[in-house]
Image (cartoon, rainbow, N blue to C red; front, side, top):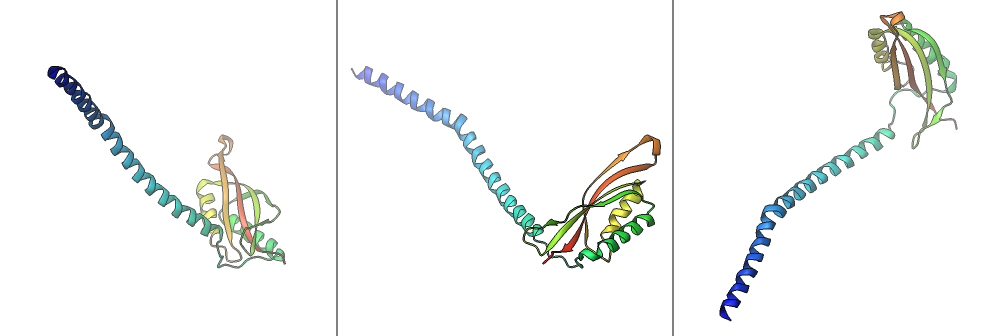
Length: 169
């Protein structure tokens, strides 16, 4: 009977040893990876929170430059055209759209669609010059350039800029 008990004890200890060995070989490294991933997740969440705050503050920009009234739009469009001509930009169309309200702001945004043709370098200089306009605040929403083999070295571009207006009372 004593031999039977020793045999059962050896089996129980072998099973226990196998479980402990299994834990150290397989579960231990997984646990370490989980802790490491959890730490990385916390860091990414912190960066995401900071980025969200930055986006929110960017949406609530307070402009330092002059906001346009409706009467001044044509003067600014002339300034944009003169700036483009100074950089050899050939305008095909300049089309203002309807003003858009900006959430949590005392201003409106007027999108202006521009189609043009120019050299690549001149187009880049023109985009840079838009930021330096004295008469208004202008931002570039997006642009697309296409190359046409028939007109090389010129490129065709479609551009959307935003003019910032005083909100109507």
